[in-house]
Length: 293
Image (cartoon, rainbow, N blue to C red):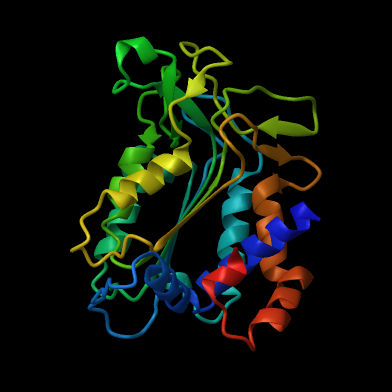
């Protein structure tokens, strides 16, 4: 029952974000957390939808994956199945296009597009390897702390050219409106499990497998967003981060599903019967943030 509630809650949240209810729900969240706060969005009153979608299978230096491009293409397909998503506003990066520089430039272009403003929704989707690196900011007595990272195409075996939560957060805070991050990856330092499922992580040879991450990647992103000054157009509450698993768990891609498991069920839900149930139940109603919880 708990799993069903979680799935429906995620789909409801994505329905609200992807079909135009995001501004209302974020405004309600802002009014709940800070009733006196009034944010001038400065937009044109029209919600446009933008996305950078990344899927990496054939890594330049590290272990390849099998179905991450399928994840990315399927995510793009399900988005454009909604009338409010324009394929011209979606940038799909696969393999060599998804280098660290390529990801940065794509996010920058999305944020700085002359037609983008504070009323819009900005999505970053990533399917690929994750890993962990030693936390350089951690005091010496906490040397067992590690930071989690995602691995673009040109990540090396020594984990150069990775993207940390602080870096990704900094890039995304250039987006003026509502930010959604979906990561189908894990940072547990795992390994291939049998023939059916493959763990979507690249182990760091310098990090013990049982090492403890200083903070979950999603927590780092949220922390970075919260540090942004309130005077910015980006309301502090206008972001959503969804990850495939917790820091000590693994995210898998499946030969049977031909997708990452997390992405498969999101796409199936958004484009399938379960999503129609969610729409039927909630679309005629005024959705409040309390209903999501």
